[in-house]
Length: 132
Image 1: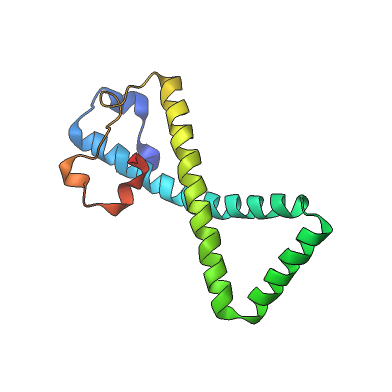
Image 2: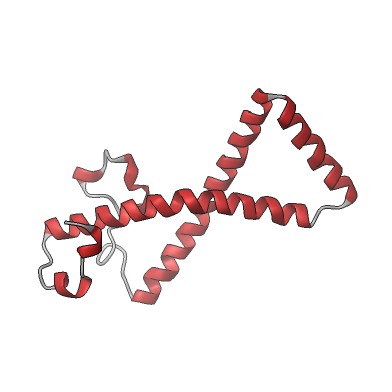
């Protein structure tokens, strides 16, 4: 079944465990696509926001680090990893808050409408981190 063919109104009447699994897998695929795009965008927004607030001294520090990154590949990799780790941490916190707000707007209850934990057959799937 193609994702574009899923019609929530029509399929809602045919709600089966298989259909629910297909919906979750489709949502996961879309989440992963958006996560990649948004992660980079979020990091760049943070970078530019910081730069927009820099004093002359702060700007000097950023230029010094950026120059070192250009000259030292190992340092650049280490620095980039720190940036990605920070972005992932911030993303996880923001996503958790957003999920709560969206769930509340829909009137969803954890454990009833939203699984509080992954079912046993999905526990080993590391791609289902969006339930956390």
